Each structure stands twice: as structure tokens, then as C-alpha cells.
Length: 183
Image (cartoon, rainbow, N blue to C red; front, side):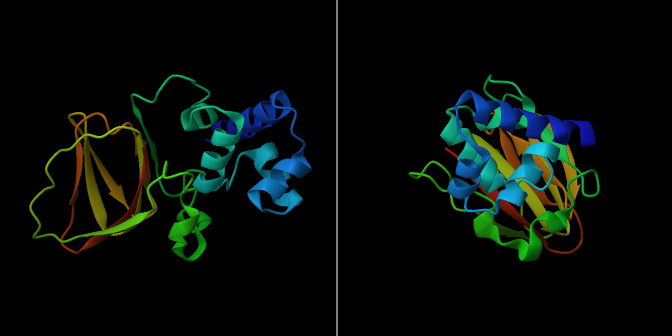
């Protein structure tokens, strides 16, 4: 996982240099201290989703190109388990507004969803763009393209929502997750 994070940093650096933007300019645009931005480029660790969306737009690439190195539209999924390189506390206090960069209506404001064990499973839906879910409490079962993923607090999933998908509570206690949809 560490190698993958470093690769994200290298992709950010490569895109920045290709666009002839200095580290100082990028840090200023993102509103972060230069030291923090340099840390992101050197390690790829702790880069908020909001900053990745912002950089993707600035560099004129798809969000997935920074995450995966693939320019093609995301047609699969990525699951990150709590403790595997990106801990849940990378979102201190769960500042939902920091989970997505809202630019010209392209990114939906983060939405907090509470699922009760007695709820009927959500109808499978599709929509354009990309979707990111971060589980805050309990267990959430995400159905995506005929696959099921059981996610616990701190786990996240990022996927192409053009495939049928839905979420349901996977335990005996209510579950909470944040969802972000990029149009």
C-alpha cells in the first residue's frame, strides 16, 4: 500500500511539472502550507479527497488518473480498509466539507447517511460520475455490479456508479457513512 501512496505523490508531481506550476503556487491554490503540500508529493499520504479533486481539475485530468495512473474512466472499484495505509483519522473530526472539493456544481456536497438494521435494502440505482463512500460507524454492505463489500468503520470504497449499486445496514446497530458523488 505504501508504494501505491508514493505513486500518487509522483503522479501529482509529474502533472504539476507538466503544467509548469511550482510547488509554492500549488500550495497557495490549495490553501495549505508548503510543507504539507511537499509531504503530499513526496509520500502521497494524507492527501484529502478535496485536494485530489482540486488538482485533477487544475491539471485537466480525471480524478482517477491521480489515484490509479489510468486516464481511462473508472469502470471498477477501489476499497481501502482502515489501517491499510489510510486510517480513518486522516479525516480528523470528520469534517465532511473537506471530503469533496465543490467546483461549479461538479461535486455533490458530502451527504451523511444513517442506515437502520430494520430498513429495507436500498434499490439498486445508477448515475453518472464517480462515488466515494466512507463508513463512520457500524457496518455498511455496498452492492456494486453484482458484488457485495462489507465495510466497517474506517473503510472506504470508490467506484463507478454507472453500474447498479446500493447500500444497506450490515449489522444489528445503525450504521453511518458519508457519500460523495462527482457528476
